[in-house]
Length: 150
Length: 144
Image (cartoon, rainbow over all chains, first blue to last red; front, side, top):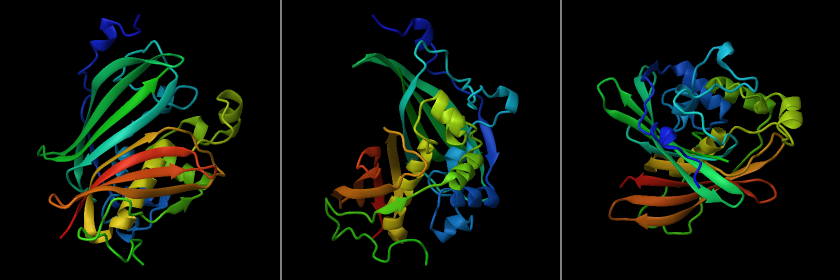
């Protein structure tokens, strides 16, 4: 007996509106400092470190949109019957480097929802793919996030 | 100093089992504050100690998962230097880590494909007890 209904799996393929962000040297420097980076090119903001896009495309919400625990609700996701988040993972493929002044377009798509039977009951897995491209469409980063709910 | 290793990995001599230089991290409240501010992440488990312990039941303030992913990226790039480029990085936040803990980012060469000029790396972040907190893998392309 599964926990995923056809109504839930019908959300596979749903995409959030693309977001366009401008990369600044200041933001790269903040990110490099906060991560205890040692490489001078990153601390100077000449180039963005490999995980910088995580900060650039983190959901930017207003105070009233946060839940009491300080989390923003991901509008791309349906309401799942399991809500306790377990491990999450990222798989990032690099096509190009990011530098100050770059204008990047990020588009998130809910690419999969499936379930497995865990030791203590059902687990829901979902995958979201973030495609980061330049305005001309050339790829910069492909990031696949997998999350597990129990 | 540029923050990268002096001896660049070389395709001719690289072999499975070779170790990447390990680096320890002991993040404090200030670093975690900066990190979450850079993301715009307001999740209370990262800065509100009474909330993290009393409401969520954690033993302390939780170190943000993608920060540990970043450390794995740094581990690879510190070893790689100007000798190559990161093609793919994956990691999984398997366990939680807390402010006050010392974490070690480390890795080994898993396989070398000399024809393609690529190497696969196994990566890990462990706590002081040796628990594997964040396992990962990377694919790098080596120059020359």
